[in-house]
Length: 219
Image 1 (tube, rainbow, N blue to C red):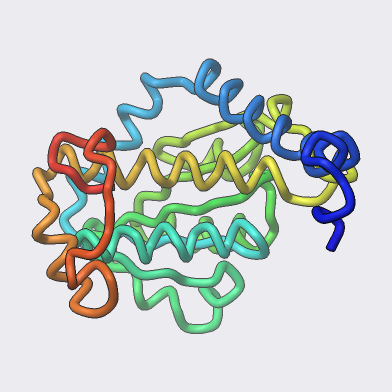
Image 2 (tube, rainbow, N blue to C red; image 1 turned 180 degrees about the horizontal axis):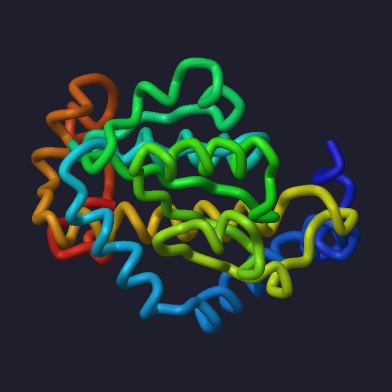
């Protein structure tokens, strides 16, 4: 075992890529927190809070996986939500979105993902509101949206300059912020969260949460 032959300091000194990745992610989060347009974020959150129907998340690739997780987290606190893969909208899933009730949230790092842009065109034509989380302000999706959270690609240092790493971290960070803000605005309590988790450690109360996410104690 390498740890038996080397000191912690020696091992730490050798793990350059590991340390660099951690450093890049921390710097990306700090950069986004400083540069995010909070006036736009307020509009984004107000639209979500006033939604009378479902919050539908969508994306493709790694951004699609983050979008799926956002939908799952919203559902876990009792907010009606579902996920639609961006490529599936034009193959029958347009019928899942109810005009003037539902809101669709697209995640796309570039903001120009073809499948997403095509889907947004159809959704807007049907009277749906579309929100976007993206790394690029001057992108097709952001320009088509009613509101957006733009984290800025200039804040990111990705693995090999192309592997989605820091971009996924900041997308997840913004999704967490969206969930926590909605929990606060809607007055959702920990009991609601636990009621949606009848299985596992959460149902037994065998978990430790940090109450600082919101005053309602849902993290």
